Length: 112
Image 1 (tube, rainbow, N blue to C red):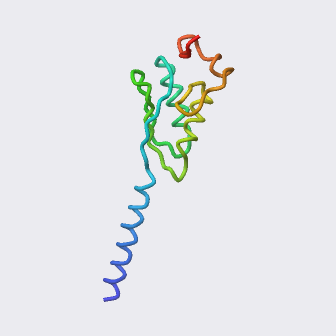
Image 2 (spheres, rainbow, N blue to C red):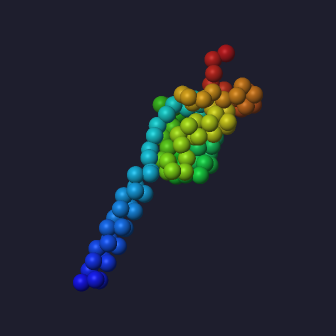
C-alpha cells in the first residue's frame, strides 16, 4: 500500500513539474527592420545568442521575427534590445545611429 501511495505522489510530482516547465516556453512575433540575407543572419544571431532563446526566425518579406524562448531566462524586451544593439530597429527599440550606419550599404533600411 505504501508503495502505491509513493508511486502516486511521485507521478503527480512529475506531471506537475512537466506542466510548469511547458508553461515557461513561449513564442512571440514582432517587427524587425532589415533588407537582405545578411540582415537575416545578423538579426537571428543577435536573438538566438541570448540565453533562453531556443529559436529565432526572421522573415524578409514580412519583416517579422518569431522567437521561441524560456521566459524564466529571458524577456521579450531583452531580445528587442539585443537586435537593436546589432543595428536593427524593432517595433520597440531603435538601434543607435552609429551602429546602424556601420551596417553594409545593402542593409540600410531607414529612409534618408
